Length: 145
Image (cartoon, rainbow, N blue to C red):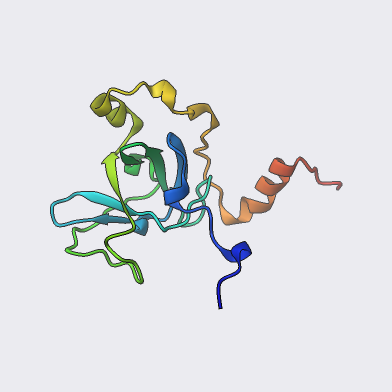
């Protein structure tokens, strides 16, 4: 059997456009024994933070910016010899993390911050109980009561 295309997850990190930000789960990142950081590019993303989807990612041509400084709770990863992801091959899925903020990336790669569409990015945390209000806000409906 082949998985029907309608069930295939398209919102994964490897499909993210350059200079676009999103959110994923913290365990999508692997820190090797040298302290180098990588993202599992097969992990899904969302356009707003919610529940455990709190790690902000920005895709750049050289790899990814991981905004660990913007997380709402304490984040730490220990160094590991190999990633702990299940069912993932090392040869395919790891994108290099090149900076921990847009400022750091712009300084290190001589890129203008204007490349980033910061006005369209959201930093609002969507809590599970507020999801209905967020959906209503997006589709423009109001409560008739």
